[in-house]
Amino acid sequence: MKRRPEGWTFGESLLNWLNAPRRDRERISQLLDDLKALERIPAYAEDGKKRLVAVNRELRSYIQRPVCFVGTTQARSASDERTEKVVIVFESEPAVGQRYREQQAVAAIVQLAERGLFSRLRRCQYKACRKWVLAWREDQRFCPGGVCKKAYERASPEYAEYQKIYQRESRKRERDKQRKAKIGAYRK
Ligand SMILES: [Zn+2]
Image (cartoon, rainbow, N blue to C red; front, side, top):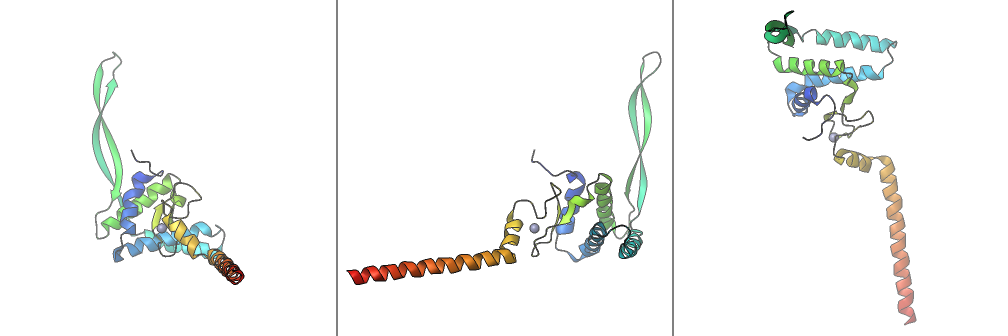
């Protein structure tokens, strides 16, 4: 089995849905961006409180309802006889409505957060990508695979500076070589 980051059960369909280039993903993307901003603001900061109120107002339209299941379990009676026992189980599912797929997305976000994995849900830091990823580790900032990380580094000012110096040096080396070749030609 292919290895997956923690929380993939909840994250997979959420990410596939979020990263599809469709206009109807914008509301949840925006909600997530707001939640991510909250992560960076200290809890006591005034703008953080305002943002939190706004986020909770937005969340009000995502409603879950309990769904009941009937199952059976094996039980042992006092005389050590096996008996079947009926058990009632509840699960939450998004309330059916216009925004059903969005409701499922919010449910997945909640499930990730309940498992302490909300911070792992983040945008790739490469500006031309910005896809949502479920990070393997706390310090992962780009899509898995390394392509976005390399592209980001190539686009960074430090890399441009390095390239400038490297090209200046290699032009100088080339000139020196040609000069030496010329001197050699005169001597012949
Ligand atoms: Zn990326």
